[in-house]
Image (tube, rainbow, N blue to C red; front, side):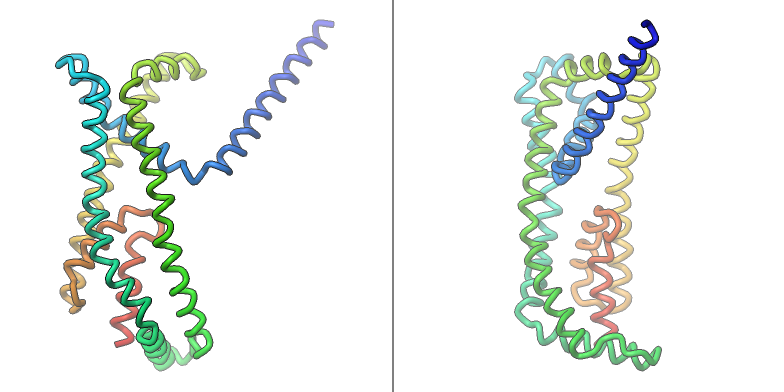
Length: 258
């Protein structure tokens, strides 16, 4: 009898765990588009936590106004490089959309030079037109994706404000529900803080270095507006996987074709 009860309890635990995992997978698959905003808000909270607590507990600043001050500061720091990058690159994109013939001519010249070099025709007339149409249709979709970016920014700042105002209560609640010993929780928290701070300092430095090196390379090889393209390259270095390829690959193709 006791064995049956123990087996039933274990079966309920397994089924409950499976249900929790299933619901987590469903939520992640449906809400993954908002994941950058969630992670961004947590990251900014960890970076701001020490200074924020020092201001409200030692200097007796008000929680809400202090959290709002942090939000405005981060908004300015994030929006300035993005604003200048958009202002610089938007005329180039508009010119590319309005002058598709130049794009077709450049692709044909690029294909011809590749054919002379390796003896294989990579781009025919039909392929060139198809690629041109796809690029032209992709650029507006890329620009329209700003809605998703704005939504994630709003979520990020909302989560940051909530965590700053209710940070201590949230941390106490997490300490209760995490199934680890207190010393392991403290160790996990310290390692997480160290990793986030290292990334928060390392990523901007890498972006600046890549932008400066790219600007130097553009200047050496005679790229027009090399300073602007170097700045845009540094901004896009923040994005993983593709990153700076968004900038320098089209520039290389353009220079090679001309």
